[in-house]
Image (tube, rainbow, N blue to C red; front, side, top):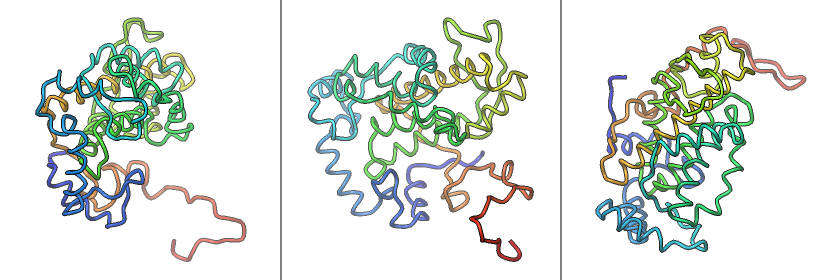
Length: 295
């Protein structure tokens, strides 16, 4: 995509969702006086987290003051991590937690070691439900679901700081157009001499996996496909940490190339017609119901 959108573009065009649109039950993207009031209140509670003006030591000192009883505060503190360590954890953890769970667990477990609460008490295992595009439905890749959760916890509510939306959008766009998987684990469980790489052109699990299965010749149930998804999850975890490290240093590049409200005036991705063309089958109707004429 040639177009690039700034923070101001996203805030301005987010209005197409309508005033009542919600993200995660928090509310819309924000804007105007209400947004300013919310952001001011947030900055009072989290001056280092939002300001990016302090040093890394300032950030860590603020983090160490966190207690388990304050886990309801949001966003959560962050200190820079080693993306290589996180990625290796994500690769190994995939075999227990699946794509979404391992992205969250690999990042938050490192933060639990460096910061403590509220990360120590966070039930990362619960996000195994993201596996296979959420309960095996093949929708949004679980690794992207996991990335969005980790980013939102750390960067904060979109209603207060839209950077959460910008970072997540950039990572989803990067996922769609990267030759995956990128990360090579220290001890791969399969594809030990080489691995097929594919560009999904979609954030969806079934499109991403389907393209790789077709290109590689390995079935979805194979050890090779599992290793591929473990590597992909590790790649996403690496990218999230790399991005958060840039963000906490105030060096994050905010430009995004795809923002649905700006491009198509609805929540959407850019390649819908590849799956949803003229021959898309109709979904089943309840008994006794019929399709309207001309549909």
